[in-house]
Image (cartoon, rainbow, N blue to C red; front, side, top):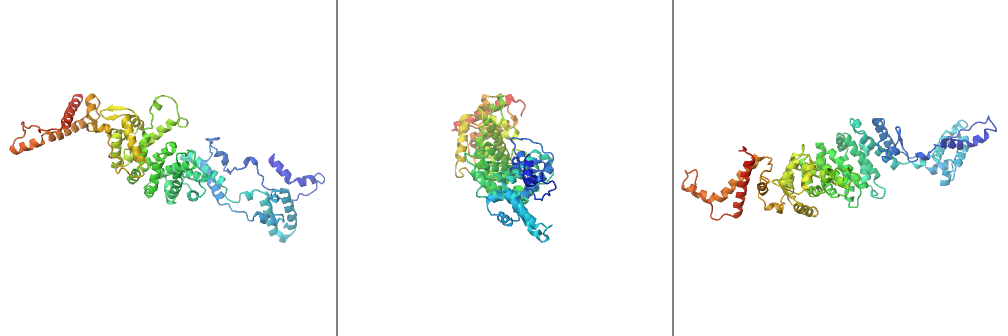
Length: 565
């Protein structure tokens, strides 16, 4: 109906004359392009309207018929939009060519423009005036400019570019496997866009940053589809562009930030890009030359109200931990101080309670997810996961703050839920003494160093000692007092524990009888066993007590594990 009305208006002069003179000839006049209000702001590409396709709330999983062809069309449309050229003449020149007043009311009066064109076209039409072809072409161009919306889109349209980028992200997200054999062909323009937008002075103005967010998001999904794209990204200086965007947005994240903020989204997508790129040696080498990246990652871990951002930072740490150099950069940036507090926000009763929940509606579920990610990041930094090198510094810090038993759990099992449950429970067994007081003491120590403006611990927690453990006798990472109280407790490596006890007893024997034995050996070098050795006249009570406890532990161990010697 809208099209019929527009055509009727265009030929209205002829329609009035035609009934009275059926032999009247229609004088051709180009019809301006017809605009449909329903399609205002739309961008048609391949067989889809991109504005509707990118409306994921309304169309969350709309199928794309041919993802490869659609991606190519999106690339072409995107590049065409960027390369838009202004018309051959300005609006002022068009009015001058048609001999019309130069004002906005004239531009909007299509009837007046049509009459001016018709009058001049009759005069300069090549059929009537062979020498007027050039003037006729200028008249036609001026008419088309004034009667269409071309003058509204003489420059690249920001929203149309954003739609092109979002559509590419959607197709990569939904059809990652289908697109994985193909190298992404748009990195040149994509990196240029990221560079320009990250330097934009109005980036943080209201409504700003949409293009940067869309560009970094597309970069993330192209890498997720095919990790080999990371090498192309590196060759095109894409990692430097991502760092510039990340460093521009990361400092703007604060306690009032929300997950849908532009700065948060750019940081999340950038972190996943760096994580994927870390699979390649050359990319890791380039990342190691970005010292500010590691401190920014550590800073983002502290925002536990923006949990998906903190999870992205933890996941990025897991990916970077495949290299010793990157491990040390993160370790020396204080990443441990930021990760440990998240472990104690875990609630194991959420899953064991049997109540259905999801991350969209349950905040504790998100905290549990962050705790798992943080635990995995610590395990990777320490070298407890396959493909990650051992890091003595991280392991020493974790053994001091989380106890050797927890570290052994992290190393032996990839079930982070088990580790987190132990950390958030009260336990007293031969392997672990852990309660609320110990947790509070640890968290106070971590919080002090986490909030310190300078490096207050050269060992990054490796010197930490729990006050509750200082008074305990620990041999082979086992609490002897508790073992003697629970002699039937299952020891995982009884033979090793037995050897540790014997070594300890030998050490204490030398402390008790060392001086007397030396004197006896001087008297009679041929005597193999001197039954007359007496203990020193003054023996510290602690040595005697520890010796007695270890002897009792050895007896309990041999009774419970017959045949280990």
